[in-house]
Image (cartoon, rainbow, N blue to C red; front, top):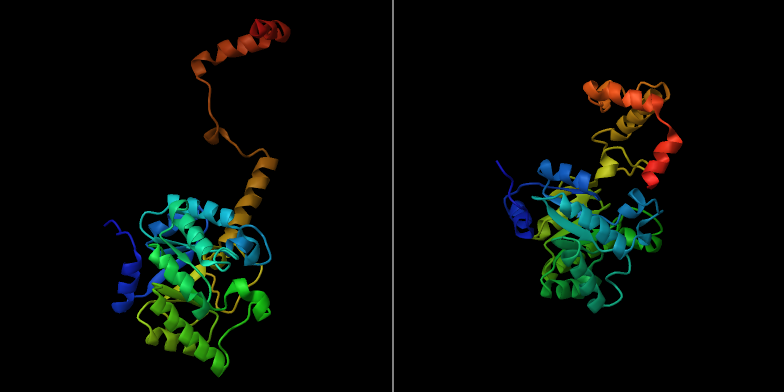
Amino acid sequence: MALQKMTAQKIIEKKKKGEKIVTITSYDYSFAKIVDECGIDLILVGDSLSMVILGYKNTLAVTMEEMIHHTKAVSRGVSNAMIVADMPFLSYKINIHEAVRNAGRFIQEGGAEAVKVEGGTKICPTIEAMIDADIQVMGHIGLTPQAIYEFGGFLVQGKTIEAAKKLILDAKSLEESGAFSIVLESIPWQIAKLITKSIDIPTIGIGAGSYCDGQILVINDMLGLFTDFKPKFLKYFGDVGKSVRDALFNYKIEVEKGLYPDREHSYEFPQETLEQINDWFENMDIEEESNKRKV
């Protein structure tokens, strides 16, 4: 049975029905196509590609152009999942006009169906402006990687009473602003549970425990492809990194030993005319043939 295209409204309906929302972060056509075939609800083209794909030390270096480039690639491979594009650092907090224009580029050029922005109550006027422009918005609170210099690193958030209160109030503000869902990153599960109970839009957890309405992981992380660091919440659901290394090692060995390519993986000239080309080759005058081609 063919899957139906996922939308923001359907994501909200899943929460109402008590159905878990399965999301993943992915960055290219090949992986996005596989993810979509597996019935994942939502694909986030995350600014984490700054580290995972481009090799920067944090998410701050990735640009709008790079994000749109990867969003385009993902959108080409997806038919069913909802595609959300992460708005990168400085693309939506300078002024509201620029924020709406940049968000619109992800929809118009990138093929996304929504954008994600980091921040709590302060970002709400920007979210409202985006929604007024018919752009769906996913919120993101807790550990917001674009603010790591403010936080002092990738640290768990909401660990004090005041910090926990702020997270709950921020979530309410994001809901009131029209966000269709909120990512909760690296916060105590008890606070995530309270937030999830207090709002009618879905919470998507990453390092926020099991009481969120859905979960998200970076595909390169959960497959063991990106192993520069491993946060507490990360579980390896496969060791594709090892499989890739094994495959490359075997390829190297076979090429060095002359085992690859064998006849099975080579094209063949028709046998009935092979003798003719061999005779021509053996008697060929290279200089004469070269001069013929010049004429």
